[in-house]
Image (cartoon, rainbow, N blue to C red; front, side):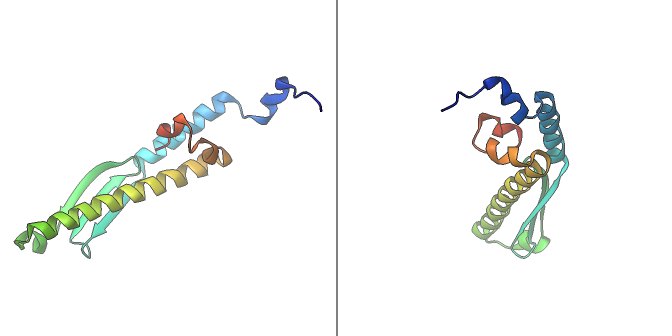
Amino acid sequence: MNDFDFGQLGQFLPDLGEINNKLARVSERVAREPVTAESGGGMVSIVGTADMRVKSVKLDNNLLSLEDNEMTSDLITAAFNQLIEKCKERSAEIATEELGPLASMMQNSPLTSLIR
């Protein structure tokens, strides 16, 4: 068995500066990528960005005129949960687009917080 030459490891890994640049692009794209979620046939609409920042919440006037607070609460909760899932999906897509195979390797690493 041949010993592995760790001096050659660098040829298999991209330049660290390149990785930092790609991570910065991922963060920038995720911060500006719009994500929308709706529930109740559009009675609740939430707009945010893929970095899970909420920009607006819109409630249909018909929903506001109902006296069923539990249903209103359920629809708002459903829309927020949908937004969270869409944000996770979209940020993962962006990471894959920018980082390629490196994104899947980083999925379970401590650096994951940089791309979500």
